[in-house]
Amino acid sequence: MKTAILIPAIFIFFTLTGFNKQQGLSPLEIGNGLKDALLQGTSKSSDQLSAVNGFFGNATVKILFPPQAQKAEQTLRKLGFNKLCDDVILSLNRAAEDAAKQAKPIFVDAIKHMTLQDVTNILLGSQDAATQYFKRTTSADLTVSFKPVIQGSLNKTDATKYYGDAANQYNRIPFVSKMNPDISDYVSQKALDGLFYQIALEELNIRKNIGARPSPLLQKVFAFADKNQKQ
Image (cartoon, rainbow, N blue to C red; front, top):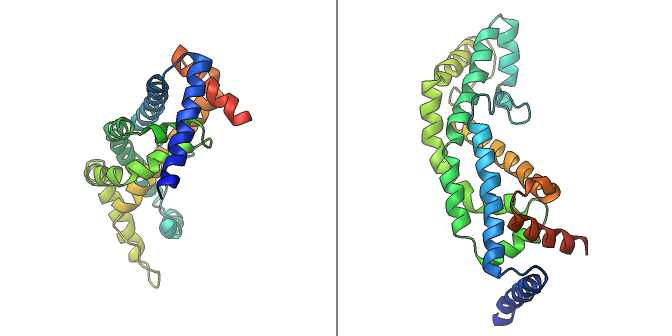
């Protein structure tokens, strides 16, 4: 058991010591450089998605009717309720944009609590290693934080009303499977999915694009990562 614990520690020590000799940076500076990159990526992602049309204007993360309600949407549009359906979609995305504002402090806290092994695993790991770290360490807190904001935003943007109206209109049609008027859990999950998708894009950009590394420290840290991932 002790041997299994020592192996990653030894690997980290020699990896970072080798890096220190090559680049003149301490393990602390390496960690700080990576954390700066993660702060940059998560902050940019949160800012983009929390802006007006951050979700609604982005076809990749735009929130549509839930899959189980898309048949209902098609039926309602055929019956002339296009505006009602459009209002539902807009209000769902406005709620997600509101919720995305809550993400920054949760990511900052996760970055503060990163260990030396976390730093090494992310720096020398897969192209989405940081995104996977955030999914593992922040999903629970983000879900707790998002839910009341989503619910409040759904009420504020009239999404609850619009979606409830859509459900009620559809449920009046004879012989259809009834549509669930509760939408908050679905929007919360889609908001999380969109946020992690955007973070993955930012992570890949920093890893692949030298121009996305604005400081000399970031350039040195990721130059080392680039070299070791090619070996």
